Image 1 (cartoon, helix red, strand yellow):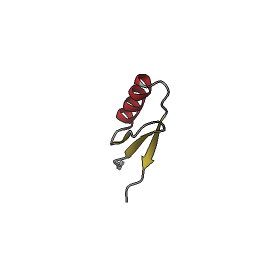
Image 2 (cartoon, rainbow, N blue to C red):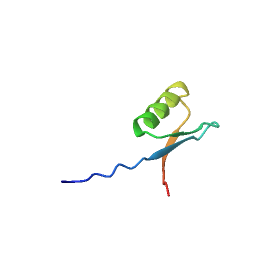
Image 3 (cartoon, rainbow, N blue to C red):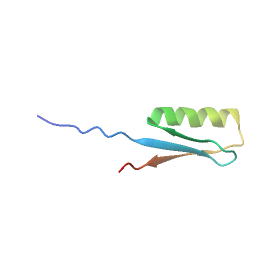
Length: 54
């Protein structure tokens, strides 16, 4: 029997041009939120940081 550990990851979004700062618990949600923000504000760049949990 193989045990698989599931770790909860968190991601922080930050925009270089505004005060957008948001945490997401799912990579897909973080990616979608970043993409949507950049689509709405074409001169903004959103970075997704993986947060380490203790």
